[in-house]
Length: 82
Image 1: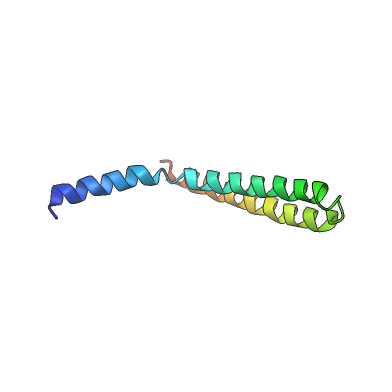
Image 2 (image 1 turned 180 degrees about the vertical axis):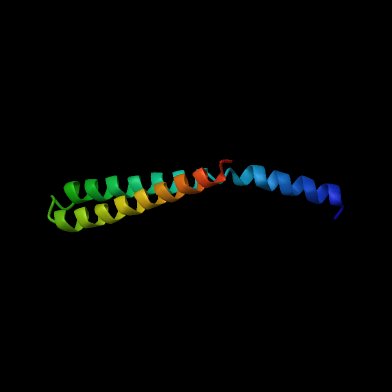
């Protein structure tokens, strides 16, 4: 493989992969979606029988989302020049 082709493939892969800041955003969207679906399934399928379990799961998912957000913001802050 020539050097030019290798460099071109690397930049194409980097562009397709997306930016590093989108990964925490995707995780946050997944966590919020899980929270809403667990709540809706509990109310519609189980008639609210498992409220305590769903609230515990939602609290854990919320804490995971806050930790993800704080970690992303902290790494973003550290990347900025002083």
